[in-house]
Length: 84
Image (cartoon, rainbow, N blue to C red; front, side):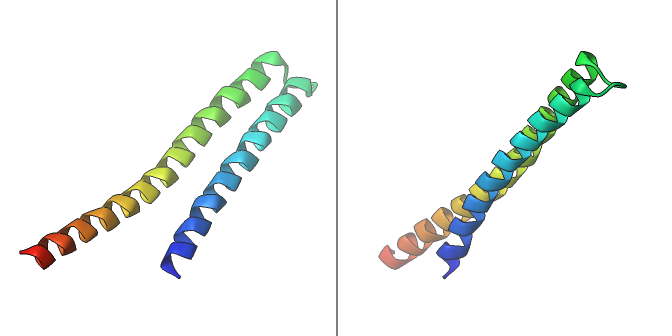
């Protein structure tokens, strides 16, 4: 059951990252086409949104990586204790 939730969380993160990337592109396009905006505003939204997306996704994937490394370490310690 635990693996189901971890796998589901990983798929959810992937879906959220894709949706956020689409939202950044739409927001940049809307800012560029806005009468008060322009190309510079669109580029600012694109760069800022991309930076946010990379940091957000990176943090979530680091959490998943910590979980995987902790599980591998626990399995290795259990194996070591069983053999010794």
